Length: 154
Image (tube, rainbow, N blue to C red; front, side):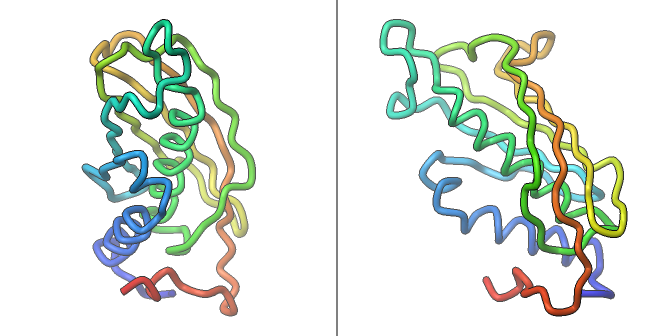
């Protein structure tokens, strides 16, 4: 995995993210990735409503979006390996997403040690001034040579 260009790492992260079954089922679309940042959108879908009275998307769908976006940001970071897994993810739900609006996530991997990557993320709907949720997490950044590469997805 050593020696991968930033572009190759971004491509691996994109293919990996698009191959995850729950990402496909939730309609997630990776819109931008690179240099430790990822942007993913999830369209509004009535199948994922958590409260039928209000039409608000279930928090689990928002959680999956943030987790996926955070992992992708780690995979694109220059100091992290091209594969990762969630160690811990804290999500603070700030308000319900507005029914009918897509939810956008932006994650930044801001620090990588020998074994752990640190990430922050935010989920927004059309109101850019009021987040739907924020997240802070840790992800694996193990450079062990025995780890399998997500390049197997090619």
